[in-house]
Image (cartoon, rainbow over all chains, first blue to last red; front, side, top):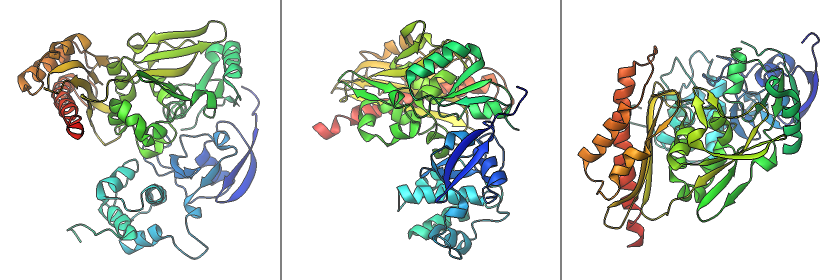
Length: 164
Length: 298
């Protein structure tokens, strides 16, 4: 293929329709970061293992490295930048992550927040097993996951475990 | 790691899809959920010249329920099956299997048909389809419709009997009688949701006295294709299933026919060990679930 062919797309990102011309091979995460400069979504493995690039597509968490931007044409995408209710405020989950020290290096945090948000949307009072299942697709190499589980429990009003 | 350049088209109908496949053949690749294909493209294990996106084709998402079977569009998302509790009652093994398929993020995109066509020997849905003896419906422009049992579909690792111009359109899942039927799925993976080192699945039907009427068991990750052992499981028919020696002998004999590979994650010997332990376990769990299905009606 000698000439680069571009495709026109329009994706609603964090409530705003963004139009662009992309190469079909551009992944959704590269589009978000490099074209829209929404660098909150992190790139980890680029092949669907680490979950750092998780975003919501039409409300459901997906890995934005395993989806081409052209596939999101006409769909609605929410990134970590779109989770807070308004500028300067944090969502309940984001606040709980601070409260419970659910991050250290912060690399996995955007993906974790997306996964936890999606969980609470579907299940407002998850038990610990549901929380662990919901974040099972996201790798964290710092926290040992416990504080992340605690944060979700904190945000959803569940009692934390005996380790507190 | 970025995919090689390709052209992209999103047809509006199955007819258009089949025309494109006829025209481009091996140069084209269908993309449904893309949860296996996109990583393979990122690693340049595959580099199609044309990607045909069938992800939004409503024709591939139909679900037709009848008494004896369920005809499920190949493009049905794994997550929508996971959310369909009525379907769980009819296809208990599919429900059990889905709990092990990837992660929420991948099940939101991944499709049932995509998983079958991809034919990963350690994948859960292919194993469930084999145990239930599902039938597959494929379509191409030149040859029209073709049906085959899933037992003839998996040809080797990542290799299914899907022609270059064909599209898997539907999966016909046999439904077992609800009362007396129990299913179980179990696996060992390095991390929950990762590829299984070995997996096992079973579905059994018992009468009110606990005597087995019907049974099938199988294992994944222990051969080039997922394996089901209907002939060995037949031994359970007419027997009570609360007999650990019987269940173990089925698991041992089934494992003996498998040829697992060695890789850095697990030796062949370890995979064999897992297959035996897991098959015995899922048979026992399926038998418990089958017995429990009578409790509500007594």
